Length: 116
Image 1: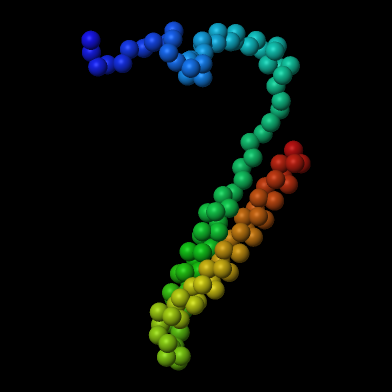
Image 2: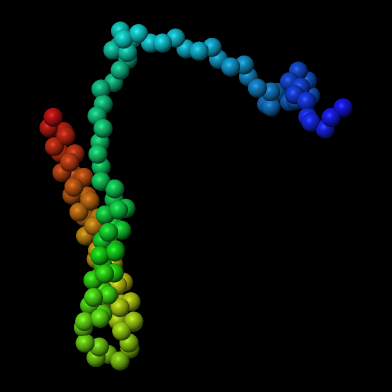
């Protein structure tokens, strides 16, 4: 005898582990049946909200880096802390603007499709 397990479906397995017989293949639908059961639909092209928000955050970081480099540092806390504080504020502002832009584009695109 070998150590390879033998397939035994007749006994020894509980009812949950036994496989059910495969269902018979369904008949191909005829066009008359499809016309009767088909539901008209259209594809909705929605903007990717995460991409818009992420772009706003990235733009906030870039603007914060530019401002931290070119603004005069009169606080004495260092340019990095100025960058971090600017980045936090501008990332939040960029995320809000990106989300608002995505929402307005989504609303505008769905309004034109409803008029069709």
